[in-house]
Length: 238
Ligand code: C5P
Image (cartoon, rainbow, N blue to C red):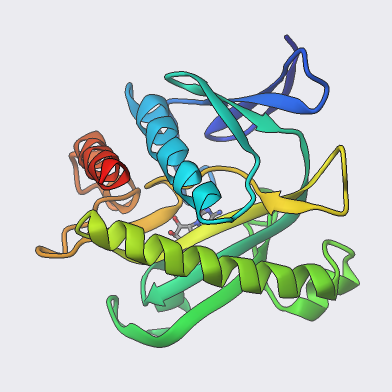
C-alpha cells in the first residue's frame, strides 16, 4: 500500500478501500516544533492503545470521529479526510504556552474552559490566531469555527469525566478535525488523543503523566504513558 503522508508521530497509508486509510503510530517523539527529537520503543503501541480506547468512548457518547477499527498494535483504520489546517486547543488549567504568553503560574484553574485556535503549520510553528485570521485565510468558515467550539467543549466535558475516573486531571489538549472525503459536508474528529497531545496530571500527587515528561526531561516517559494506558483500560472496562 502507498505511503500518503508522513508526519512527526504518524504515517498515513492507503488501504484497499478508497474511503479509508491506515494510520500508523510511530515511536518518534518530537517537541518544540521538531527541535527536540527522540525515539521511544513502546510509544506507537501505547498511544495507539490509549487513543483507540478514548475514540471508542467518544463514539459511544455520540462524537463522530475518523476511527474505524484497530488493525494491530500500532495501526488503525480511519476514514479518509481532508484535514482542516486548524488546531483546536482546550485549556482547563494554566500550563505550557498559556503560561509563557501570560506570565500566569502553572496550575491556575480557569473559571471556564478556554478554547483557542492555531494554524496547523510546522513551518510557522503553529501560531495562535483568532477567528478572523482563519476565515480570511480560508482555513475554515465561521460555521466551522462555531462547530469546533461546540464539539471541543463537548469532548472536553467527556474527557474530564473519563480521565477523572482514571485518577487524572485533564489540564489541556489539542484536537484536529477533517471533512469526510466521501461527504465533505460532514466534519469529524481526526488525529489521536493520547499523552502526546494532552496534559494529564495525577489527581492525587500532581505528577505529570504526559509529553511534558519528555519536553522537560523529567524521565520515565514511557512508564507514565504505560500507567495512563492501564488506567484508561480500567476505566473503559468499568
Ligand atoms: O504548548 P501548548 O501549551 O500550547 O499546548 C497545549 C496543549 O495542546 C498541550 O496538551 C499540547 O500537548 C497540545 N498540543 C499538541 N500539538 C501542538 C500544540 C499543542 O498536541 N502542535
